[in-house]
Length: 81
Image (cartoon, one colour):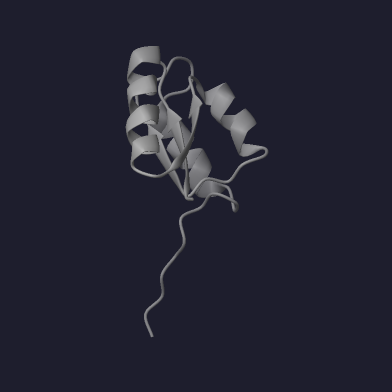
């Protein structure tokens, strides 16, 4: 099953995403902060990430830039033939 990480600091919202995506057939992990996401990424490489943009300390925009800069989590670049 595809793996999705939900990054959301509000517990009720995070649980709602986890439950919905789980019912949709995804394996779902959750992080409540940038630090928790980084810890998960040390051992898991997800197929998708649902990102809250307003997180405490490190916002979602900063995390997205980090993910794009990391070779393991960078979106695949499609080339035309």
